[in-house]
Image 1: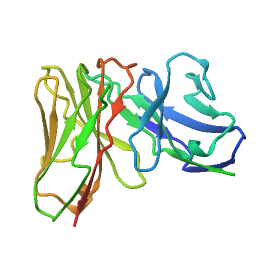
Image 2: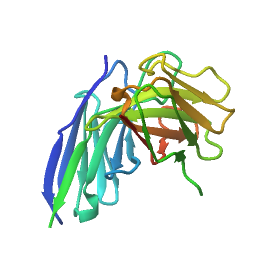
Image 3: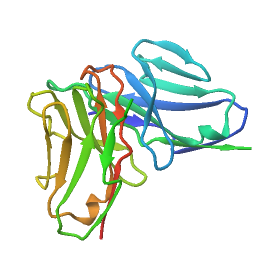
Image 4: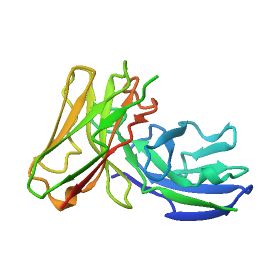
Amino acid sequence: GQNIDQPTEMTATEGAIVQINCTYQTSGFNGLFWYQQHAGEAPTFLSYNVLDGLEEKGRFSSFLSRSKGYSYLLLKELQMKDSASYLCAVPMNYGGSQGNLIFGKGTKLSVKP
Amino acid sequence: GAGVSQSPSNKVTEKGKDVELRCDPISGHTALYWYRQRLGQGLEFLIYFQGNSAPDKSGLPSDRFSAERTGESVSTLTIQRTQQEDSAVYLCASSLNPGLRYEQYFGPGTRLTVT
């Protein structure tokens, strides 16, 4: 089966750095997505990793280790607007379907002044 | 350009009634997905459409759920004889291609409350 685990909640201070971890178990691997979801809003795409290593995109970076089934999202210079849920997701890998995502329950990040 | 739109934004219905939810994907996006998000839970895949291919219905939780899509445009998700456990936010997403690496663009969702 496929399973994704991530912490339920995290709290950090404005201006600081926070790392949100995600572990996954999949039958086959086709990359890993991170989405941001503000309360009451739709998820928005942050990153996609398919190869090992760190990919940086402004204040946000995403890391992947396929051998460990592990990813993290790194947020630097935290801003109040970064308060949101961060969703880790992997594509399903069966049959002829492509792209259907399995999501973790999300990590709710609260940024304090 | 316009993003994915969904209607209605909120729907309150009585147990046992049927509801129909609508999704307008981004123009040109061939793949369309429906997900459900219950309170405090992750998104659950429901159904996937790709062009004129047969949809992947493997995520539909029961035969009370069905969905249709007209070509590469509008999709409707229908829930018959609604139950309280159907209460959730129903999210629609579309992507340019069905490939595994293509990001999905989500609509704002329809919040369904079954009383």
